[in-house]
Length: 85
Image (cartoon, rainbow, N blue to C red; front, side, top):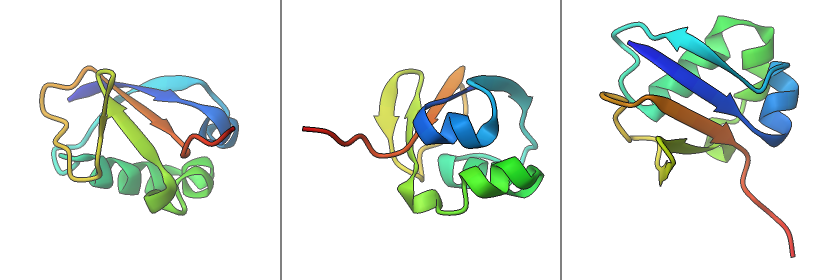
């Protein structure tokens, strides 16, 4: 499955890119598995996704949780929790 990934804030800084297109292995079926796969790919991913519980995700613009399925998705945005005043 081909998927566009968009990275924001310190996730983008740690990954060294604003995003990428990836071909997911069949076992990567939800957000949690995606984060595990990205962390296992290389050192940048390991650094960016070392604490997956801190990462927020949106599938095709809609906020979602770690168990959200990726089937049919075109884009996943990954970012840290939003803070501010």
